[in-house]
Length: 374
Image (cartoon, rainbow, N blue to C red; front, side, top):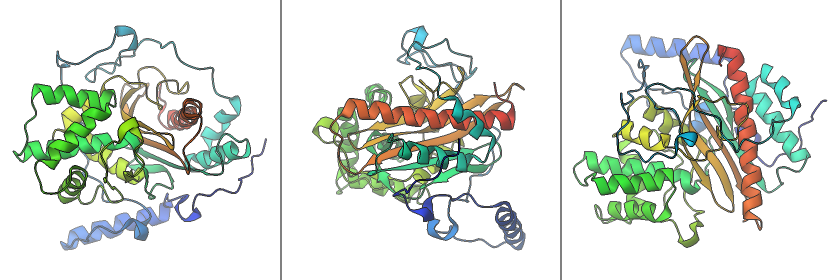
């Protein structure tokens, strides 16, 4: 069946930012020439180059703890993710839905960016995405060091709870600078904020940041991130505590912001990177692995979800396993934002969460063909 692209409110200029091969080769030659000459360029704006190209230098692998700390708050074994040091296959989960439609599978052999665009167009044609909803998608493959999907990736969207790892990073920056301490109590509250998305714990850390400056807590969080990591958080805006009831609509970030944060996290370029990875690795009901039937058991996930009556999203790193025994990590960001709050919160967030799971399955099937994944 041929699916035609419907009219989409998302800007065409941001729709497909994956550069062609000739341009990538030209930029690589230019970078080599500049390096040889001993010169350097200031980072370009995203509007100028269509994406983020100042990637961190390649390292052998992230530094995982050799043994999980005894204080990890683990769920019963049936719901446990594999420990980071082994990536063992976890047991099956009872909440997996029925397999996705078979028509999704042939798309994985084609260009992945186009496949996701077609799938989003199909959702609009069939009414699974409304006219007042816009989406953003980003997939970056650490193995090939390429963006595979960039759809509306440079536009700021509501962050919801996906802002919480950014708050954690601002706090750890203050700990590194000696202005705050990371006590056992703070560790407990940090796990509540990241694993269980506790809003009171989030506001607690924002208030701690407030005490280190004359700025408000949200303003100090944003200032700290942009002062210490100016190239990462380009569209990030942190302007409010988490309001009562969790209706946080004003904090914003782009898919590129989440990717840059995750990439720096993977390469140990952030303070307390290992602890941040541990926190984001704690078991939760995510939207990229849990219930994504195309993503096999044993795929490790480092992530944070975000949900309000106007936003459903997930950002994280998935570590796929190849049949050759190697790991194949990639970032995945999926965001669906609604112009007005939904009147059916539970049904809306469940349906949009399943859309993100479907796209996650499409992405994994594509990578499985690239790398012979399990």
